[in-house]
Image (tube, rainbow, N blue to C red; front, side, top):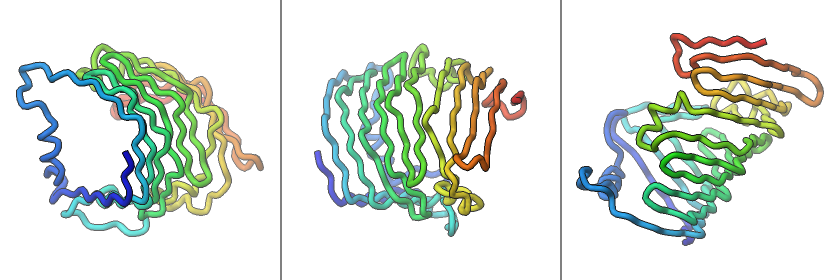
Length: 238
């Protein structure tokens, strides 16, 4: 399927209101939640999106100029190449070959790519890469194992994580649309992060920030406890 020139406009009158596409969500939602959903088995091997736009607006909220505005998002030159080799009730395979766009604030996503397998007790991500104009964030392949998708939110803080960002680097000015103070920081910073554990107790095995000209050189190890609990969050790094 090839989609050219899509101009999608999503909005809602207030922060608490439903969006103008809620009726589509309602149509796709099961009518009788007591009965099991109907089984389906689909494959879509090529979805191509070109020269497209997407806007999201909360109409009651004022516009913020000069930086990213979460209530007024406008994506231009939206491109995507996606394959969905497996779409079953609780078993999905998603190949995100490329997503790119330019946001009105100046933020630019050059490429987002990843392969995902999602089933009732597992989320597996491989080949994850995010490129900005002068940055590249690469994650090692990882898996999240849990009892059920229905209880994932409750289980998340106990799920084991093992993440590595070897080969990644960020140029802070690429994020100036989110934090304008970064606009003059144009020196790439190599980022090597190795963490494992879970949200209750996260072991930072290595955190390195390095620049080619040695303007920044930082190496940290330690422990972070209760990552999701702001009142009991504990950070012990050295």
